[in-house]
Amino acid sequence: LKMLPEEKLKETKDKSLDVVTMWHVMEHIQDLDQMWKELHRILEDTGIAVIAVPNSISYDAKRYMENWAAYDVPRHLWHFTPDTIKKWGEKHGFVLEKEYTMPLDGFYISMLSEKYRGARLAVIKGFWNGLKGWFAQCGKHSASSSIIYVFKKIA
Image (cartoon, rainbow, N blue to C red):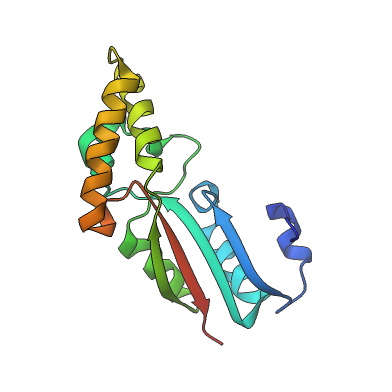
């Protein structure tokens, strides 16, 4: 397993990697077009990009609105929905193969959002709202606080 910082992508040989994973990274990238181009360039023709990002139409995003901790301005430069991340991938030669929810993220984000609101008992209220979000995502992926996307490169 070889882990590389973003700066090393430009030094990576064309079609030299099978898989690239980005866990809560994409929302921090200034030039998204360039990042997607680099992913396409360095992945083999059958390569996979696994990308996890917060979901701005999640149960907790709707509940907390401007206090949603995953907005994380100014560190988060981009905010994604399942539809927008899919379109970014398609624009750069990828097809969305699979989505997975990150069920525990909603608990953490809800607790932090309650803290941002200045709530008393923020951990308890956040846990309760995280639990409601967990049940919401059981019936609908798009309610999940964060989603893992598996993209396959189109050769």
